[in-house]
Image 1 (cartoon, helix red, strand yellow):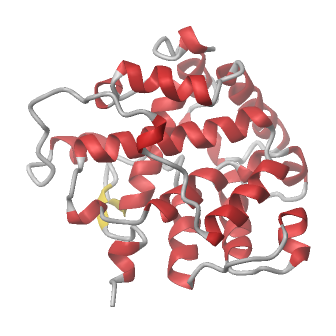
Image 2 (image 1 turned 135 degrees about the vertical axis):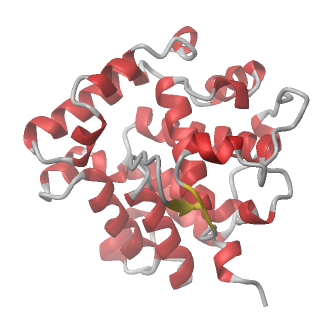
Length: 254
């Protein structure tokens, strides 16, 4: 019987990316990363992943949906390069996909205005309910289908809630750390040494950015204006948008 902690990415790893990437527990490979096309990191086709993907397609704007899939492919490229076969990162692709495809579900106009919660928190709670229910009142036009085990649903919710919780001390789940690394990579261009340029080119060809940097900054500013207490303000109300707009790594693909 599989261990849900490892299967669903709940293994504790350093929350600080610097601590993680310089730790002797995760030695850096000597060669640089190789190109990894999207065909090498396919989207899972399990009934659960298919159901949630259909939900995302009907609820996320195209730029956000594309961002979510870029995060998926970049994350697996990082995992395959930086943590190959490491038991701490032995979680399923399905679990990581679910976290990626739902991590920004709280940013939609409907969800932003339906709660006083910061988008990551509301998104995590929404994902927790969605993953554990095939009720059409929750799944709506995505229909019914497979339901996630509680441990998997909670791991995904935890990762979503913490995906902007950029700490320098403490721990985070392995799947949450990978989600953070890939999200920050796509949004700001940080950790460019973890992904081959040809991987970026291929991912952006399949899932275009559609001026994502400006779109994301507008989303952040809209939420911060509506909810001055929002967690996004902890990243710096002007500093973080400036990092996103200053993403020179992704500028050629905007």
